Length: 230
Image (tube, rainbow, N blue to C red; front, side, top):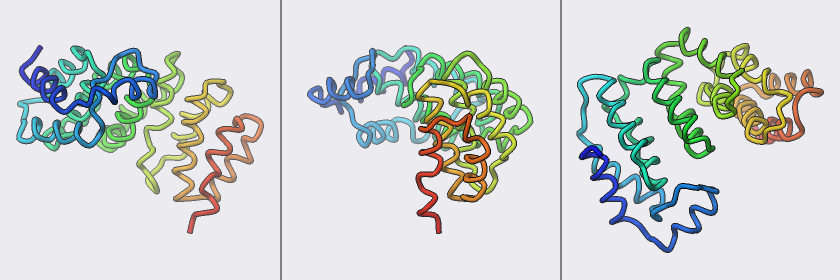
């Protein structure tokens, strides 16, 4: 265990409310136990430990992130690893060579809390930095056997707003249109719902054009906020 990983574990234990832990674990349906640290104190712990950190290169930063992730015994430690991916000093490392690290975390974590935090907070930055390479990888992920990689591909432009590449979005959705998986159906609806804030008419057009392919859940999610636009 690295010094940073040990410091995180120790500080999280100090911040824990053990009485909360069973409920947190039950809510997240997690096999990994919780310490009982809610979001605000967890972020305070991370800020106190991560402020001022710097790395000579991406490999050193990834090594610190993965040491925390792989050595975690409690779910909050993995949340801390995800927090470490977003510190100011790591902004320069949000490039395509970080995708292997994120892929490990997504496949290993295999649940929505980990996956969505990584994808919604990091992938758009990588797309902006290394679009051709990232786009190719996401298109491959959209057809992967791993459900969470498919979800990641569908959601990778969730922060793009008017910069959304619609052909790319629809290409990432298409392989999962007939999926029965809740988390893929939900992701499709979420991605379309977010874009509807930018272009509600296009989302309505897409839903109508794909009415036979989209699940009811995806359709409802896609159209949920359209009446609120404007």
